[in-house]
Length: 366
Image (tube, rainbow, N blue to C red; front, top):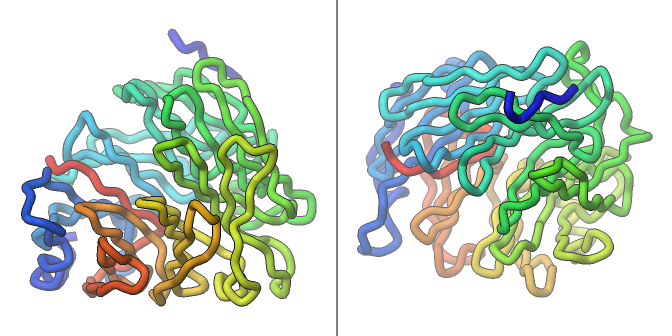
């Protein structure tokens, strides 16, 4: 089916958070808020925004568990929050007053996969979705002003998860996880032996899949990715095979004929427990969160080699603000890593009364 394009207050230690969010230098910079989905102490699913001064701007209850969020540069204080699959909702939240300003529903034959991205001019919203009865992935194009569906493209595979816009704005890169799912069996993986994950590039104007690249093992489900300013793509995988199998989990692609596996010892791959979550690239380093392995892993993007780690139990979300790498955890911890030396430099940790979900986003304050 194609549609024509025309047609909280949560309790926190504010003193600790104030220190955690202090700028790395005295230069005045625009105020930003950290946005993440989370659970409060009562187990309610929320989305929350926090200032650098350690104040909860607002927290908003979600219908069910959320996943990623997306800044809206033309709307300071606002962010889109996407549900965790196989739910059908996304919401626009104005964190200035803690109000949901728009509700978005997937169409009746699909559900969201937790991620979205804006076009370069901010006119269009692209989301990954599951056309579940046809066992295909979708990239759904919406008007970014009113969220009406304009078009739907094949994602180039099954189970599309995170996507990103290439620096030129003309193509999307999509992590097709390869795993077939159906909302009638919400968390069951239906095709693990036959799954076919890939990294696909899609032309945003035509919806044509330009190229696809499969990982070396068909059970390496590519889920999350990030892009450097020069267009190099870095992807993290979650292995779906035998628990005893050790596979590379971090890959790069920048015009090569196949995905380029990063290099690490068997011991390091084993420590990652077959699972990666968020990725962030900055200043020659790629940081990959490893929730099951309870550490942040660091990789040199020039040599594509593992260079170090920081232990952080149940780490998940990553963000970058004011020269510092920020990491959250499912245990309610926030860590600020030294901007000059994030691997071995000093860090600070703050403890909150909320448990963070998979991702974090920095947005301009309202």
